[in-house]
Length: 429
Image 1 (cartoon, rainbow, N blue to C red):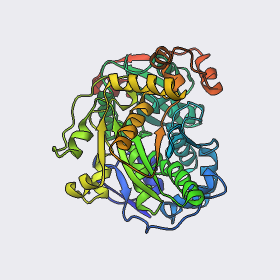
Image 2: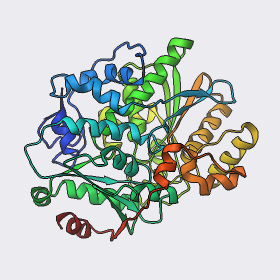
Image 3: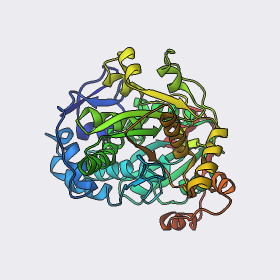
Image 4: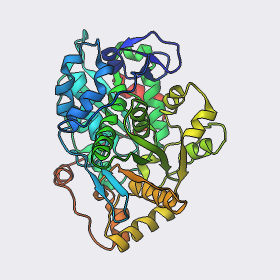
């Protein structure tokens, strides 16, 4: 299978070429030249086996095709359980059991496993650029830490991630470099995209990306939705509906694509924080990027979701069809706090702020008469946001062992102005 740009101005590329490049030469995002036909799949022996079967058509004809089972085994070495919540029919898909306690661990490890196997003709180190609003950077850092021939540069908005997130971003050292940018996530994302399209810089410093703009991050995220939905359907005969908290839209788009490929998923509803670009669009307004607003659910503080290009591509640019297929709901900080406190008081359930946005949206759907089985995607462990969660539940959140190990390491990050010239100088130097 070959891949093309969402903007139509770049030549087609093989999977390996698209993975190595990160971003298409015309600034667009790589997408399949043609989607595989929907298939009837059954759950594999484990999460890795299910993901291998789902992704196989995308790897057909590529040098990585024979490596796919091993790649998936390395990326999906931990569970993503679907657990029932207190309310009948409601579930949580726990995606935070990886080494950095966030769903980004799956895609980051998958991309790292792919790039280890993609041959390069350039003897120089490959620099992986990552813009993060909280969780992506640590997941990518953990996945590529001490990988030969790779340098990772993580840009994050200074003061706009949780203290534990910031510590994770700066605690790896070695081939991982953390830059705290005096701006918002959208500034970091814009700087990364500009660097990837800077031909003169690329001639000096070979670059790629590990954000969800990368195929190697986006496609594997279908795996945990497919596995959960297939197992649920096999045991109950019912489809699983989803509420997905979203910022840059990559995780939600993975669920949407999985449904397109025949996975038994029902409705997919997007939950956002006070950054309401997507809810405004789905309510009928023209799509218009906006400056991001800082919130408690900081990993979703995105005013220009990159993967919106892919979502429009999936629907052939038909805004009416897209609006008819999905809805998006904005949740403010006061409601996030109330949801966290109430769910703990009533049921003893503890969520991160991002997951709480999805829980609130699911509660609203039930109040409006939604039936069937629903799951919220739990994107991060609540211990990463102890300063928000613990005062609301009146006690400590148990910290996963993997997170304890990272928090016990020293951490540091370099300051960087929110200007492309500053990043370009840093990379070239």
